Amino acid sequence: MARTLIAGGTVVSATGRSGADVLIDGETIAAILPRRPEGGSGDGNGVGAGDGSRADGDGATVDRVIDASGMYVIPGGVDVHTHLELPVGDLTSADTFESGTIAAAWGGVTTIVDFASQEQGGDVRDSLAAWHDKAAGHCAIDYGFHQIIGGVDDESLAAMRELVDHEGVTSFKLFMAYPGRLYSTDGQILRAMQVAGELGAMTMIHAENGIAIDVLVQQALARGDTAPAFHSRTRPSELEAEAVHRATVLADTAGNVPLYIVHLSSADALGHVAAARAEGRNVFAETCPQYLYLTLEETLAKPGFEGADYVCSPPIRSAHDRGGHGHAADLWAGLRSDDLAVVSTDHCPFCTADRQRGRGDFSKIPNGIGTIEHRMELMYQGVVAGELTLERWVDTCCTAPARMFGLAPRKGSIGVGADADVVVWDPAAPTTLGLGDGRKHHMAADHSVWEGFEVAGRARTVLSRGEVIVDADRYLGRPGHGRYLPRSLSPHLR
Ligand code: URP
Ligand code: ZN
Ligand code: ZN
Image (cartoon, rainbow, N blue to C red):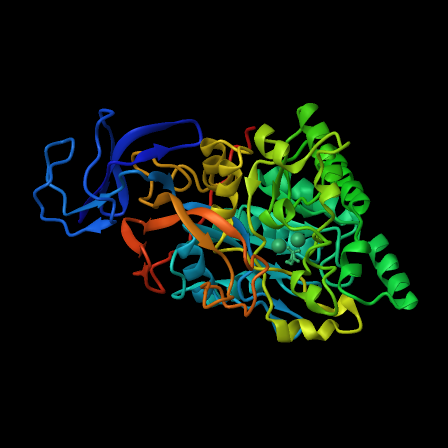
């Protein structure tokens, strides 16, 4: 079993930072060795050929030394909201399990949790089996699954029990949006929450009032308001906030069962999460970089059909909806206070040709955008800008998602016995995101909503279970390295 020492860096956890070397034995972290302040070695050029002669803290030799001088050493990123190879009608989201997990690895992500999807009329177990078939043997990093319950009935409720007991699937997503496809009534959501509560599983809710939104969409189209910007204008934040509030009430009615609001996009909605949490309820929420950085005016409202590339739900909103000015809450403050516990991507890109479906009718544009490669660096800009501490960055992007979804302590932190999923983060490296001027990303989509974004800091060296899968500008991983992660029930502690 190869022994690797990551030497000279600053190890950052959700609760602190210190100068320490990280010893890896095979696939596992074997020791964290505190260093004297003057510690550090080498020239910062990355993975060095081990000569077998370097001694670790136990006096034993190591096979390889990774020089992390001047770098942060952080846990591999954990993205608990992705949609790889997601069928939507006759289209499929652009990234396969192979391309999506390779792109994730480039961005310092070593674990994803994707959504197996049962649509109305489908079978839950069959959908999970289909997701296993798509992923097995193709992933560059480890992966787990949540289960979407798109049709709540006796059979799907029974399947939830089986998935928790036998499949390591311990979280279930239900939709207040998308009537006719994935939507559940309040009664169905309550029933599913009751079952999840009995099982100790997490209920995840897509909180938008889809019934009211459908009325606004039909009215907009009838008026001739067919451009992409109307995707956002027909999904106002009030209808997200109302749905979030309703979800918290339903979860309380079901017995204060754990509730996780996915892809929360507005300060109005956050206010309801904060209020429920202030009352001691088991309510948690995530947001995504697109809601922190992009605005309706600069994206969906671009001239002609250009805005189509930015269609996702909840929609990208006006800066005002993000909060701050005059709002009781704002999304960055929510991340600091833990009312927003997690940042994930909701990675679900479609190529530009697929989006053409919605020319003349914005409601036909497939929903979803791509960020799997850029979440860690985008959120690191929050550190650069003074919005987040380094520790909070690690917590929201690595530690909290792993804990909340039954992956800790193996994933999400650098601890003895944990999987050696470690990122050596170069805090200085400037990068321009996107595809213009000869730049490239590793995601499959032919455009980037992050085009031209300038970021400082990036993943220099990425290890997944002790294997270096990215180093400097080289991808060294392989499809099939990534393993399925059966997840345990998590304590859901705040
Ligand atoms: O637009 C989005 N978010 N597409 C993916 C499906 C979902 O609701 O998460
Ligand atoms: Zn959703
Ligand atoms: Zn999603």
